[in-house]
Length: 250
Image (cartoon, rainbow, N blue to C red; front, side, top):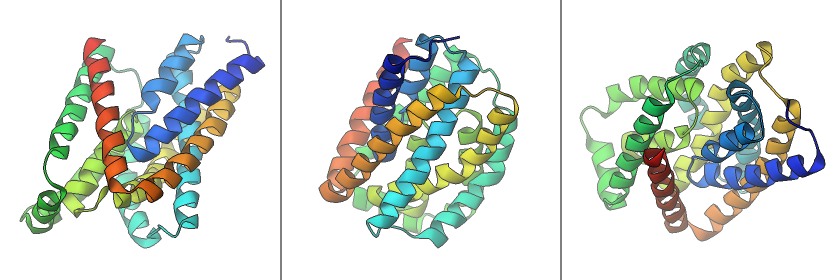
């Protein structure tokens, strides 16, 4: 078992803060936290489970921070979350080993596709989303798939949620982030329960990550609302590009 010493706690918390910052503004924070825990000696499943605890805490913190800044639409957030919950429950039951090489390639392709969509002017994307004839009936199956992906894999789900809300609901990036953290808060619950029941949580790592993610979340919400959508779009594009390159090089 890894050593539960103060230095490890500080390192995990710092990386957690960076991950929390990225998760709120874009996504992909788990691409930092899970490899770190594995490097420190945690089993992959335990690293994944401990990270889910921190993700849950981070989402709760982000929802509270957006609410404090008067950026919240709980009725719509709840509706979107409930659309993903059945998929999240199903995905949690299938949260088992997946071929690493295949997973990283799929995730890399998804991120590159999202980068491609960011090249289009926002007004064109929103207008297309509002007028597309398939929009209404696509929402439920796509949100179910988002929930399944989040419950099963989780890593990179923030990017998928943002792309879904952007294209199927015509939201801007500030709105997508606001709803994204609420959605993650809801569909992460089944996975957290599963990992706790199966004993795949290291509470030392989970608490350290949670503290760091709360700090990173607070800073991310503050900067996104102060700097606006241009700042969020920049961070999102950079994050996606770096993680996509990293995944393809693995």
